[in-house]
Image (cartoon, rainbow, N blue to C red; front, side, top):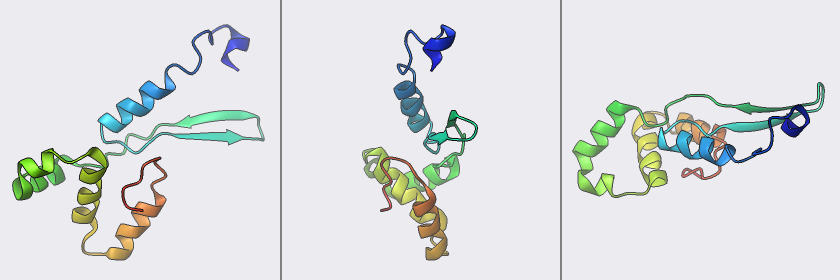
Length: 106
């Protein structure tokens, strides 16, 4: 589609960079949406922090280097448990609503 307006010679090369940088910032994964009416392809890029700084600090204080050595998805799962521990229903609701490609909750 971008090639039609002359800006798509490198079309698609930026999408992996966007996903990589969003994950690096601990933001919710971007969502690619196809709309039929009107005919559109949209990339939703919410800057919703999945690992708040205070949560990282608390997990780091509790687990030290063990936490820092975990994979990103494992850190994310622990953070979600810590944040939503008062309400297991709210925890699962957040996990199921997160449509990232590698949801550590499910």
